[in-house]
Length: 130
Figure 1 (tube, rainbow, N blue to C red):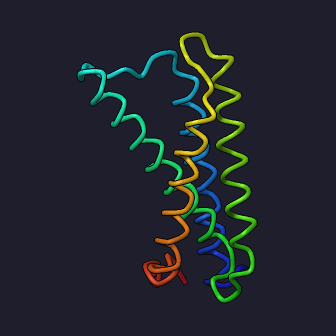
Figure 2 (figure 1 turned 90 degrees about the vertical axis):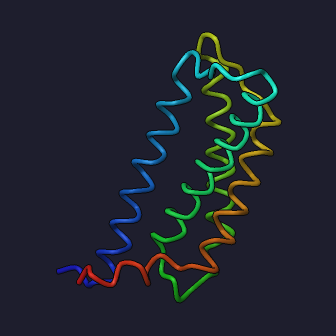
Figure 3 (figure 1 turned 45 degrees about the vertical axis):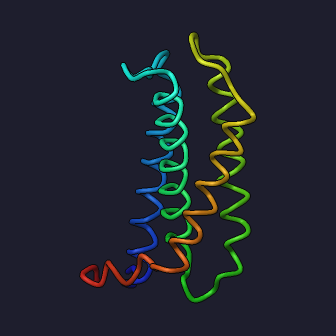
């Protein structure tokens, strides 16, 4: 039988996997252009990169034991490697281009995800799972 803590960790791991799949799905879409002016579209895309990788990092970090934070370096490396894999994947999608600049932007999202996790541990929000 799983403890309450293990259930929460499993839930966050599942959410992280689903979020990672969403990133992969969006990367596989040939054109995600908005109808905004190019400069606004550029900013919107970069903010989206930051957001999706912040959420991914937060979910992955939340799937570990919140009492032992030595795993955060692993989470950071894993999220940045996923950003790299995502950009390589995009380079094979028609109409998309892989970009090292996007990996740097994703890394900003990883940093923000870790920062938010350290400030607001997710396990406090899920006290209802027992």
